[in-house]
Image (cartoon, rainbow, N blue to C red; front, side):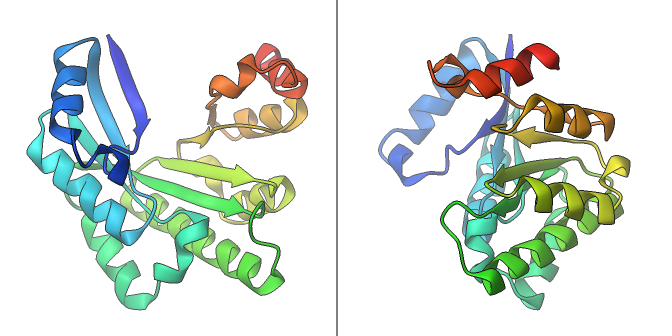
Length: 195
C-alpha cells in the first residue's frame, strides 16, 4: 500500500472529478493521503477534504508564494486549525526565490517561515518544507529556529548532496520527486545516492 504524503487534490484541476479521483485512490493501492495547504484557502479546502474522507488528512500552512494572505488574524486562524484531529502537519511552508526577487518580499517569506516553524514546534506537528533557489536562507532560518527539534521533510528536493546531508543531520527526510529521472538531474541523482 502507498501513503500519499503530499497531494493537492483541492486544486481546481480536480473540480470536475475530485470525489471520483479520491474514492478511486482510496479503493486502490493508496491507503492514506495528506492534502497539503499552500494558502489559507487551500488549507480550508484540505481540512474539508479530510473531514469528508476517512484516511485523508490535512497539512495546514502557507506556501512562501502565498504569504500575502497572512496577517495576524489569518495566522491566529491557522494556529486554531492545528488543534483539529484532521491536521497532521504544518505545510507547505518555506522559501521560494525563484519567482520572487524583491528583497523585502524575500524578507517577509523568512519571517512567515520562521513563525510557521515555531507554530509547528509549539503544536508538536511535523513540517513540510518547500525551498526553491533559497538554500542558504532556508538552512539559516531552520537553524535559527531550532528546526532540528521539529520533525519533517524537505519537499521536492533540488539541491546538492552536501546540503542534503546537512538536512538529514537535522533529522529531516528528503523528498525527491520525478525530476530525478531527467537526464540533466545529475546533482539530484548524486544527492539521492548519498542519502
